[in-house]
Amino acid sequence: MAKEYSPSKGQTFLEKLSQLEQFTETEQKQKILEMNEIIDRMNNFELLIVFNPEIFNKIRKMIEEKKLTLENAILLLKHAGFWNALKDMPIHEFGKSSLENRFEKMIVEEEKKNEEKNEKLLVDLCECYLLLSNGLALTNIVSIIVPCLLKAALNKEENEEAQKEVEMALLALKNLGMWKHVEQELYLDKTIEIIKYHQEHYNLTRLAYQPAWQFLIFRFCKDKSLEELIANELHFAREAIKE
Image (cartoon, rainbow, N blue to C red; front, side, top):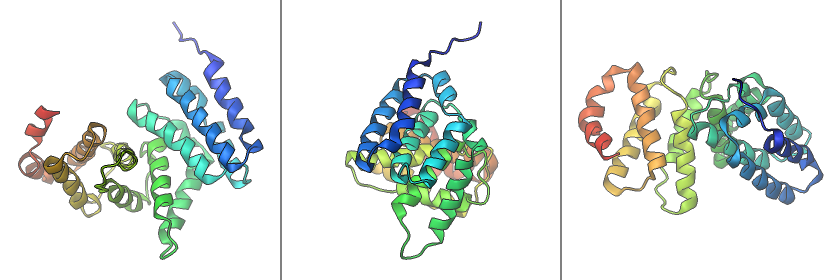
């Protein structure tokens, strides 16, 4: 029997999205926080219905026409991507949209900058791209995204805001899955440092620590040379029992 779709939350979300261009940047941010609360109440089916290629294309157009600031668009998209990763629910529709290509170009352009590079923006773009694309379309920018997000995940500050950013970075990296090959020099040293530091200081939340391990185990599926490191140096069996 087909599952019924209740349009109420989805329609409310779409109405609020269409109304965003009427507001100032500050007002937009408040409205997006309200939209994020609607996302929190959506089930998997509702999220898949709402986040279709048309919606992503609409967001891209709003950004380019300056009807929605990039910062506010990221606030919305990161929240959707967070639930995508947390519920392990692929939003493959992002890969069919022009927004994915736009974000990919922005990541490349931002990375090329030197002194003018906005590190926070680059992290935000990489998180949005990977959280929503699930790594399926990731090709030439893997060498940008992986080091960028691991650098963000190495933040050892213990305040709540920093912990949330670390969680987001590691959840995004987990979305690479096991099908995407990543060269060891891009990830190994930093991933080891993240895991070992937590084993000594317990600085990560559980929501961050498990994806760190998952990211490494997924690399093991492609690279069996990691077996000794995972088993002996990082004590996988002991950590798995603890978790």
